[in-house]
Length: 279
Image (cartoon, rainbow, N blue to C red; front, side, top):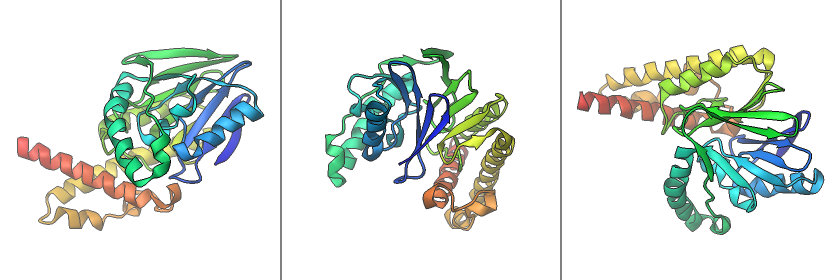
């Protein structure tokens, strides 16, 4: 696990195990807020750093969405209060429970993990949380998933965007148009840094280009999926549409970028074909 102090009392963590997934922590005088947990195999390292090095317990955990690499480490903090979108709670009590049971059959480590869903939820608007001198604003940024949220540290203009902003946008199980709206909104927020859900921290001078790159990528894969839907063998056509042809690099995210890209294309193709069948 990599660790970096982003600003005063703000820390960033990045996985060395899976797809450069990230988490963050806001440190108050007596307790901390943890934003996501990395994969459970690395959560203990965050816990050790916060409790033994910084000497603060985690009082709140904010789950940016329900996916395993962001929320399955919740059970390492049994005294923490979990915050998330109402759909995050719903998905964790249904999809996550069944997914963990299946994953535990192949990975004995996961058999000791429990799904702990958010106790404080919201559906619309935002939630505000004060941590020492830091004011956090928690709000919806759907697209990657319907339950996706982001966390703004208002004083520092640092956004923990979850998977609403990634080195390679991923919309399987989400909605591409909502993703574009969320990315566009984030790009207009006047931020100092964007902490991506996967990938390195984006600095102020990089935000405009990163925003444009992500929107261009999503528009390009929409075009590729539409073109594939008109072919006799659409899946063969998609396999030839590598990630570089849509404007991203295959070396991103510890080598899983091309796999994410192909999954994006197939998901969009499936959506188009279903629309044709019903229309």
